[in-house]
Length: 282
Image 1 (cartoon, rainbow, N blue to C red):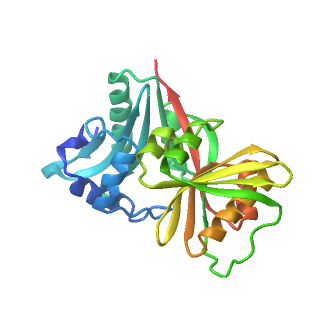
Image 2: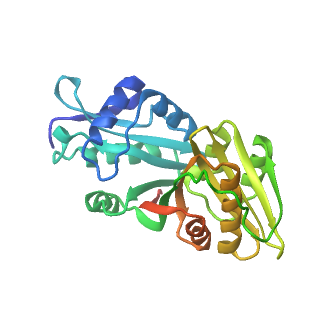
């Protein structure tokens, strides 16, 4: 084994972890820059436990790689896993994964989840080696602002904007299995959520939960309660963008299903895909 050790990430400051993480992404297939404020928010939103997260350390206490672990109830989530360029081909990634799985087992958890970007062949092979099984593909997409949008989509019977608490109530009533980024615990940590409920003349009903700032719509979740999923989700999103014409929009980790077809109708385009994976612990 190469000369490095795996230690708990709480040995380091968030600033040190931010710098190390950014170095792991200097030549990554999808740029994902981080700053201190973003990492601090990331840790809070996704219940990252720094004591259970892992750092690979070489000579002179040099960070060679890191991986973070979110922990909720009986499940964990591996995230921000990366190896710095000068730490590669030394077994660092495998060492970090061993530490993260061992930390999950020590906590008595039942499952460990993660996502890997589609096309990251070495990453996928590493996770398969540790017994992770693929569950589904998840889409990351964007929609540019359309400030000249004036007309509401046809067939809208009623629409209503809801506040933070009402948005959380909708999120707690969702069907299906949300990804870690969209689980109720994640969304409950987001400040100033809003929601828009839309009813169609033909009986369709859907809603979208989101966070809006001056430049962007994020944290988006769409649900269809009645009617054709593609039609209703498209109408709901088109209505949303009538209210927020100047904001860029970003949606993360949406399954490739009929609701995604509604996103496409509403002007969204796919940026890349992630493969969600899970490992069952003993």
